[in-house]
Length: 241
Image (cartoon, rainbow, N blue to C red; front, side, top):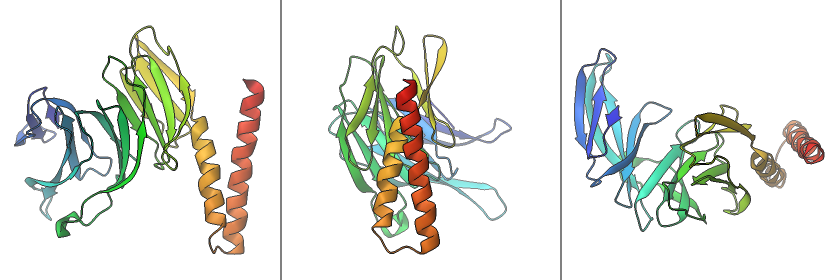
């Protein structure tokens, strides 16, 4: 998939043949991505809605069409960037209106079900395009604005910490590693890697919530072990820093 600043989004096969051309109707496009599951292409831009198309293939693997299936709504201004968790069941967006949002996108859109808003948070917007990354488990959102990088808990919406002046210029890209233990940033011809400390804290909170539910003894033991491992990391991290 390729997309220009204008409103044309084009799907290609691996031989370079054009499969379809889609009008995003965004006035101008700021971001376009293929979902990790490979089923969807998504675009955001000047308008406050993120638009999602499903790419459909026949049983023999031949391309059929790209159908508009749902939108992520709720922002009051253009959406700079968006991201997915590892299985495309969750999405996060960051807008010019100074907020980020997390959505549950594991829905029955063919029956008219809309994405469910899970959390809205506020970030300090600088005079640059903001970027967002969603951790693979969907519990942490990282937002950059200018050279500032902030980590948020999707569970609470609260900012867990901000790192200023990551680069002399703006951060241009954010990406969690496959396990969600690290966040990579790009800017000023450098890649920098940060521990996802917020992820360990949210893991402790989410696992403690699981313990309050009805779980088997084996599950309880495994959850308690995960909590201890996260607590040990945070203790060692605190000592080393």
